[in-house]
Image 1 (cartoon, rainbow, N blue to C red):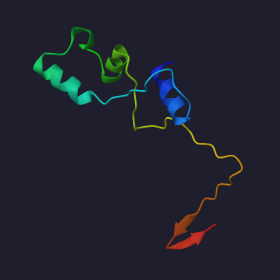
Image 2 (tube, one colour):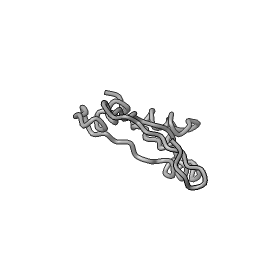
Image 3 (cartoon, rainbow, N blue to C red):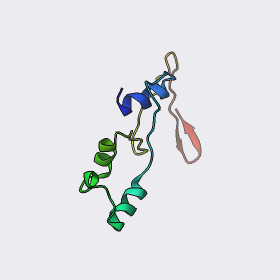
Length: 87
């Protein structure tokens, strides 16, 4: 399984093939780079490419990971104008 498939399996209450691990290491990468201690294989890589190189999962809060679908549930949208509900 890929790191993405592991995260999606966990969200679906399924068992991934191994531990789902998606650490936030941006601070560590920046500190290592500034100190000149960044491993050679990570130099010049962007954050996501570095995570891929290390075989780590990517968990980013900027976009949807999964879409929840609720069958047999009707969606009701309400608008409020001046404190009054409009349907």
